[in-house]
Length: 398
Image (cartoon, rainbow, N blue to C red; front, side):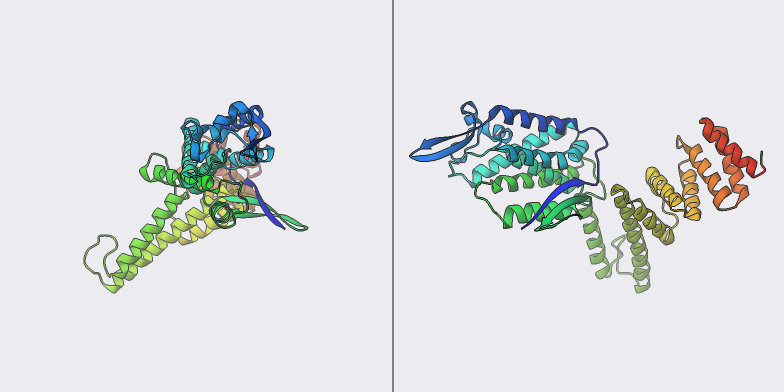
């Protein structure tokens, strides 16, 4: 027997996902109020319903649907495992989507996903008189949105096979795209009681709507979301096609000399490599893999030392290099930081770090004294000011 369950992702929202918490709470409260499984005899056959009699009209029956059921069915559940599973996945993937969409946008997105998945299920199963309940379609829409927004993040999977138990990290693009969508809901359908059509409709809505929001500019994107990946791939494809036809890839003018094509291709290759390294640095920082980010940063500097990272990324890399005792590289990174982000509100602490690096580890008294004096003029923390004075005294520069 083999099983795999996602237990966490490697990113956290920048703000409290209160809207997601509220949706989870509403689902749980409605479940506790409505859950009461009981059996009826219908045409001589037993029919088990998971909800109280007064909530029967909230379930979605494809053959006899009412318009309100396309929303209410998503707040009913067929059992404790059903609601716990749905709410766990909503918590796992919904927090970061909530952070990206905002509270009102996220609630509207969730409710629209519930309606769309219900409509998809009703259309495909139009002749079915079996009632449908559950937030799975709405949760699938949120999970689809996560796939588009954070495809390169890592999902930690808890697996067990007979007596082997462990964890493994896989990309969200693979786990959601292949495991959850393709395998679980399209290939390996294991139960007749699961509304796979609603799941797939929810995923289609979540992926399609999020791509539309990104493509239209209604939601800000980045190079690391699925739309950004598609745009970058298309640019590279167009460039290859242009060069293959012998045209100037920059102006689209008449064919150019082989030497010019080669030169342009080399420049494009360098720029493409630099952008790929920047993407790797950002991805590693997102994954909290600071050591990997620092190494890619050094590779970027070796390729093109004119490249400048965003402020926080550069500071994180410099701090990591210092913690790894790569003092020369750390000092260069800190100096680049001060050169380009001199207005940083805590620049004096970077100056202090540079002074200590040059004084204690690089044995270069002149830059050490310069940075320590600059830091001492701006530092307000008594202990840090004292550290500056002690270091200057040791260097004989009091």
